[in-house]
Each structure stands twice: as structure tokens, then as C-alpha cells.
Length: 150
Image (cartoon, rainbow, N blue to C red):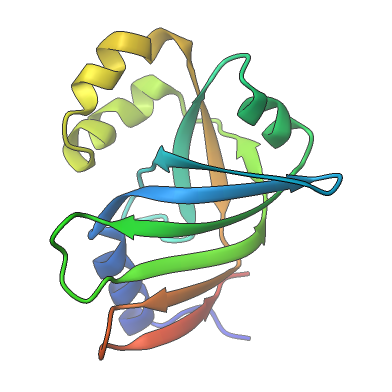
């Protein structure tokens, strides 16, 4: 299968721009859990999402143990048509990027992130999700596509 075309990437990034949070579900040994987290992305890496987790938490232990992950983005309040991106069967892996690398992007994309950074920034570690199969729904009555990265 070919890499996604320009139109598909543009639609993906258009929907990325409608959200700064996702509901992320983990499953390990038959135990499921879900949490809402902030995420960031970069235009030159459309197949990667970055997020942070607090050192020592249960979530971090699940990621480290290789839990299966599914997620759906949550549109900003007031975004018309409820656009979203959804994927399943992915893993969260430690990133080579640091919070220092990502902080400018968090401050750009996530309203009031400075307060989060001031409160817990020193305890955050970065994870990334490398996307393979993604469902992009631009909203009610809008375009819907499947994107396959490889």
C-alpha cells in the first residue's frame, strides 16, 4: 500500500488542529483503563503523536509493559460537527524527544498549558504513538477516510 497522499495528510492535520486532548484506553492482561491526556503533533511527522505522563504513575507502568492502546481525539468545545481521529492496536513508547523539546509546541497548541508545566513539568516524561492505521472523521456530513502509514 502506498504512503498517504497530500490530501489525506492535510485532512488529518486539519482534524488534529481541532483537538488538544484524547481519550486513551489501555489494555493489559484483560484489564482495561481509560484516561484523558493532552497531546501534540508536528506537521513534518503526521504519523506521530506525543504526550507526557507523570513519572511513577500506573499509566506509565502500563505503557512500559506494552499495553495495547486505542485512542480518540476530543474536539475543542464549540468545534462544529465533532471531528475526530481514532486508532487502535498501537503502543506508547518512550520518545527520544524531551519535554524541553515539546514545551514550545504544548504552549502553542494546548490552552493554559503553562499552568500544567509550572505545577508538574519536572515530573513529566515523554511518550509517542507511532500511527499505522488511522480513521479520520472530519465531522458530521464531512469527509471520512482511513489512512495507513507503514
